[in-house]
Structure formats: C-alpha cells, structure tokens
Image 1 (cartoon, one colour):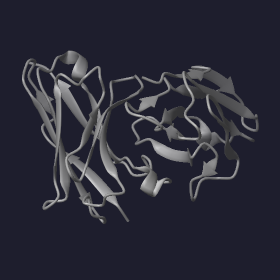
Image 2: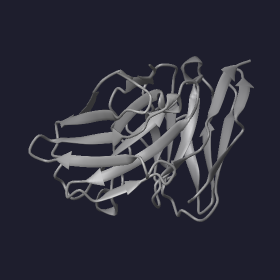
Image 3: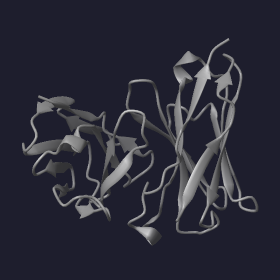
Image 4: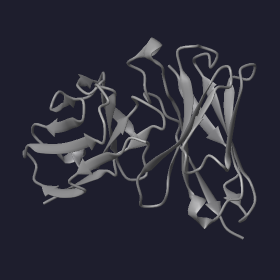
Length: 107
Length: 123
C-alpha cells in the first residue's frame, strides 16, 4: 500500500499568510493526487486534481504542485473562509490512501 | 449535475451488519469510465477509503476491512451498496459515497460526494 505522509498535522496562521502543506508518498504516484478541504460537519470538497489543476470555482489563491513522491498545496494569502482541514489523496493505485490531514487554525 | 445520496440505518448493534446504499442521479452508474467508492470518517478523525466498485461489479477493497466488506452495484436502479459485517464501536463513523474514476476520465477522481450519513454502532 502507498502511505501518504502529510505535514504539518496542524498549524496556526493569520489572515494574509502564505500557507504550505506537504504530502509525501511512500512510492511514486506520478501526478495522481488530489487535495480536499473539509470544514467541520461538511463534506470534503476537492480543490486540486492531477496534483496541480484547480477545480472550477476554487479561488486562484489555492495552488498545487509536485509529481512523483512530493506534493504541495499552497494558499497564497489565507482568507477567513480557508480555516479548515486539508487532506491529500493518492489515486494512482488501489487501495486509495489519504493523508492524515492538516488543520489550519486561526492564530 | 451529478448527485449522490447515502441511505441506510443510523444505528447498528455490535456484531451485526451495516448496510448502506448510495443512489446516483444526474448520471449513469453504468459508465465504464468510473468507479464508485465508499469513504468513512470516524468522529474527530481523518478520511478512510473503504472500497470502490464499477458498473460490472469489479471491486477493490481496503485491505484493513476486506474480510468484512462487500460492495455491490445495481445499474437498473443506478445505485451501489456497502455491507460491513461484524461491526464494533470502532466502525462508528460518517460514511460517504463518492465517484471514483479510471484513466478514461482522468480528471474525475473523487469529484462528487454524497452528503454523508452517520452510522453509530451501539447496543
């Protein structure tokens, strides 16, 4: 199975900060990676697919990069509505595996 | 617009069977381009993929749950189902259904999700 190691597990940040979240795969997954945002009590929402493609309707302050084993989700200027938990997901192979999540909290 | 909706009991007794159905509307479950998946989230924890199934019944399961999981599909009703046997309190979670995909539809992995349904395991 491919393990997805996400870091940090939690972080505090201020509105306007640049935020970077990393996911490392235990083996190469090409660009078969998606990023999701989940707010409390809500359904996970896909932000990024194919490692770097922005989902329609998602603000351009979100971006994804990486290929192979190392991936990054960047929020260029954190907004109040961005405080949430973020997950990566590899879908290169079965079983699908999620990162453990990164909670972005208000500083 | 594709929509997915989970249905099933919200309470299951320990050692019994959890059974959920995901009704798909706005698109055909019989498309060969997609798989259809189940994901769960235990209270306060992360997301766990349970398994995926395609229109012909081909399945992939999470190895950690494989001995207790069965998924099925009914293309005539445009829905797919999850059975989890011998449940314990550790299976208490919000269960989501979602669209998985194949390289035939490369941009559609887990793009649509149901609203989720909380299943509690308790006597």
